[in-house]
Amino acid sequence: MGAFFYLQFLDLLTTVAFLAQGVEEGNPLVRLAMSTAPHPVWGLVAVKSLAVLLGIWCGSTRRHRILSRINLFYAIIVAWNLVALILAPR
Image 1 (cartoon, rainbow, N blue to C red):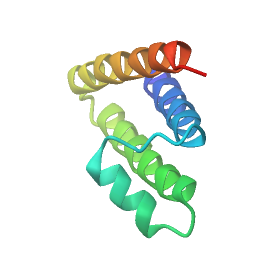
Image 2: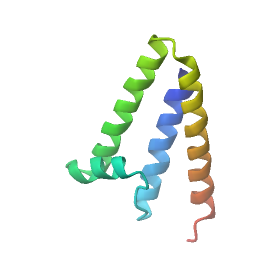
Image 3: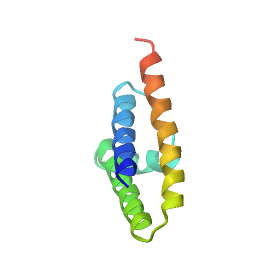
Image 4: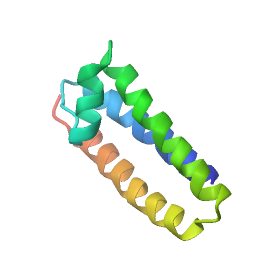
């Protein structure tokens, strides 16, 4: 469960780093939340909060297999984001 929260936090940070560089959010649902919030970061935080609640639900209902798959998915996303940030032209 700890890995899930850590990966959500890293995804939040890398997304904020992309936004600071002027890159648009790729996920259309997150982009919608960001465009309807008073500030884009608040929309992102709202989506991440929902993800954390979903993770807590998965953990409390012993859906560990789903949580493991979600962790793998976010680990790939965070790794991709970090590589893109490192290789981005300055």
